[in-house]
Length: 407
Image 1 (cartoon, rainbow, N blue to C red):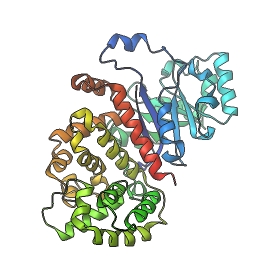
Image 2 (cartoon, rainbow, N blue to C red; image 1 turned 135 degrees about the vertical axis):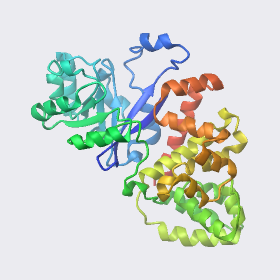
Image 3 (spheres, rainbow, N blue to C red; image 1 turned 60 degrees about the vertical axis):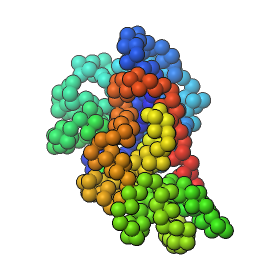
Image 4 (cartoon, rainbow, N blue to C red; image 1 turned 120 degrees about the horizontal axis):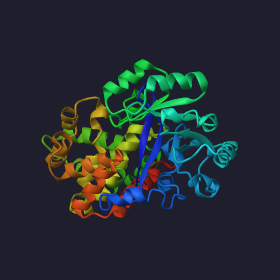
């Protein structure tokens, strides 16, 4: 099983929702299986583990989760398998759900229960057949690479004026700009965009749970620097602040981990800094989208270390994942951004040159985020990594993040 979260964003490029992209089998091992088993266990709703491990509220109270289903799984007892507010779930259907009476009645029943609906992959010449289903939808996903999107949009504006339109398969900045010029799209999804760039999303907000735990650790008699470093590593904002302080004190420090930075600062100065910085920030707002991505990447990289024969480098891989969005955070090219934190050469090479063993892990994480399941499957086969181990590593990173922010 493989599954990940893909962001849906608005015209300001601010993340507004997520779609679960899932694949149950490694089709690189058995490509024939991809065509013959699509409906095997279709009664299951793939990717629910993500919601269970992360929690719908951890994603953010103002974001919805698009949950893809197939024709059989629409008849599942949703209340027994989905532990989330109904109005936060958008049931995403495709052409496997036919415009037949039993399906239409089921959709209307679920709508009365509070669920929202979206539909995708309907050929333009079949929109008329799907009129009864389209009338019950909240969103329609249109792929500009397979249909005349101007014609389709004009039709929806006229016949279904309340239907929100999502442009998908937007793979370049140029395509995004062209669609924006057409206007009228509510949301977008595409391979060119996986990182938030909206100013609000770029803010690095502190995690209250981390700060409370850090105060507890450092105010114990003769506290352990390793314990403090472990807690600091749970918060991107704290790590950045710590490294900034260490860099003022040293030259060419080549920091390889948070523990290394804490040791360089020393127990007395670390305690003084923590008590001052943490107390001031305890009333800060919820973590931002960029904080979420940074922390999940960090933990995922750490979890993947043993499978890439880098178990002894787990701390460095955590830091690499944490700083993999440093260019977005600081609004600078990565080459400039990474100089401000003086990390080890191995981390710097991975982030700036995409070279070295660490870069393989970072590339894998990004392919996973993009739901590039063919490429992920290929890497798993070549590296003799079990697909389920990777999925467990990802789910663990989501659970870890959930626990950090659930206070």
